[in-house]
Length: 82
Image (cartoon, rainbow, N blue to C red; front, side, top):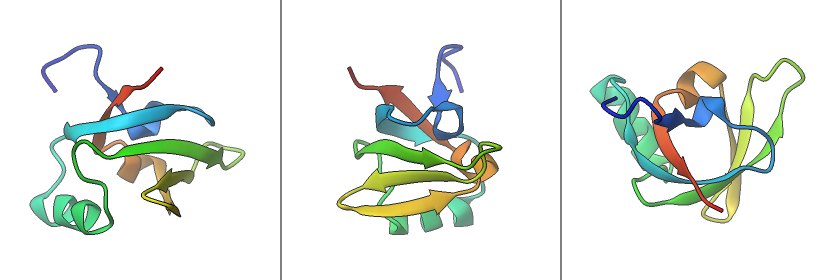
């Protein structure tokens, strides 16, 4: 991460809307898995639910919902939308 203000999907709260800007230093195989699930740069998503301890994170992207562990979500760089 070059931008000290960069956020990851793991930093978000319920109701936040964001756009994917890239990935952190996750392994190539994990990045491919995220891309295959539709988490591509430019995709917009919203956080629909957080478990009581904040893990996992449920998101809505491209018309479907998925859950990621907070650590996995931390591999996705995002920017907040209004």
